[in-house]
Length: 114
Length: 109
Image (cartoon, rainbow over all chains, first blue to last red; front, side):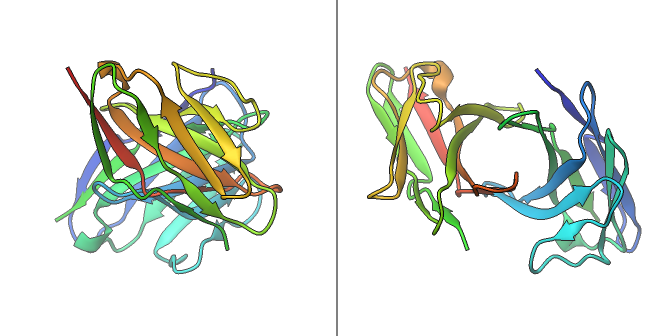
């Protein structure tokens, strides 16, 4: 089946710095990718839809200037957490839809802001 | 707006016992319903969807539009079924998924 990768798998950064997370579709093209945030022992919350060649669409309540999304190519979307704060510490997961109904999820990136 | 509710955060059953995970949804249109599973230290993966009406790993789920439910059932739970299970809804148009809060299943030997 299709595979989605994320890099890095775990990142620690200091408050005030920015960190970039990559999401790649390894063996298929994805014009759309989704970014989720998952708090410990909680569900996935959709943050934004990444669109290749156009601006991302953010869900209500998600700060677009803080969570910058760039869909650079048909296989790569990046999420940059700018001026990170400890409350941004979370598990970030991306997904990409396949040809039919299935969505393929990345393994997630754990962000810890100190 | 659509919403998915999984009332149980944790289900603990013994091996061989039946298990049922509840899922209720609210959506004004015709949704597609899915169950996703996340085993320990693994990524989220699709378990089954309502349209296919199939049984995967012994699990089945029936969409009940009258009760707006999509409960997941397995008659005889196995230890390898221990995982987090998420019910998800996709609107008729588009690929966005709305997830329920998740249910952790623990199958004891």
